Amino acid sequence: DIQVTQSPSSLSASVGDRVIITCRASQTIGKSVNWYQQKPGKAPKLLIYGASNLQSEVPSRFSGSGSGTDFTLTISGLQPEDSATYYCQQAYIPLWAFGQGTKVEIK
Amino acid sequence: EVRLVESGGDWVQPGGSLRLSCAVSGFTFSDHYMDWVRQAPGKGLEWVGRIRTKGKSYTTEYAASVKGRFTISRDDSKNLVYLQMNSLKAEDTAVYYCARCFLDSSGYYDNDSWGQGTLVTVSS
Image (cartoon, rainbow over all chains, first blue to last red):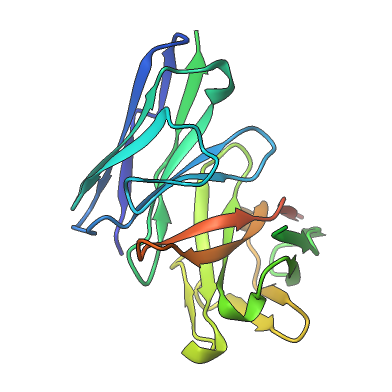
């Protein structure tokens, strides 16, 4: 099975900061990585699909990059409403898996 | 509007069984693979499994942690997907989400729509 390792597990940043979260796959998976945002008590929300494609209605301050085994989610200009936990997901068939999550707090 | 609504979550003793349901509306259910994802209290997301469409013979995939104990099925006539859980363990305690598996225009799959989740508690 393909595992994904996400880092850091948590971070604290100020409004306006650029935040970078990384995800590493245990083997090459092309661009089959998705990113989700989850707020407490809520279902996850898709932000980025196919490593770099912005989901409809997601603010443009969110961006994704990478291919092969290394991927990043960048939040350019952190906003108070971005306080949440972020997950990467390897979507390389047939078995998928999520990273461990990154909790983003606002200073 | 795409809508997914899970039900059936409950408290059950270890070794017991439970069946979850997910009712969907707002899209052509029979055209989409459907996933189950769970989240233990205070923990991260865990992909549980998938059922494909009739065109793919309703084949299924399961995470190693549930394979042999959990079964996913679907009823395209009722727009329902099910998760049958047998031989439940304390570590199966979680909120269970159903999610649509969507093939985006770029050719990549993702879970673009989710239900609100239903809580399963396994405890004596």
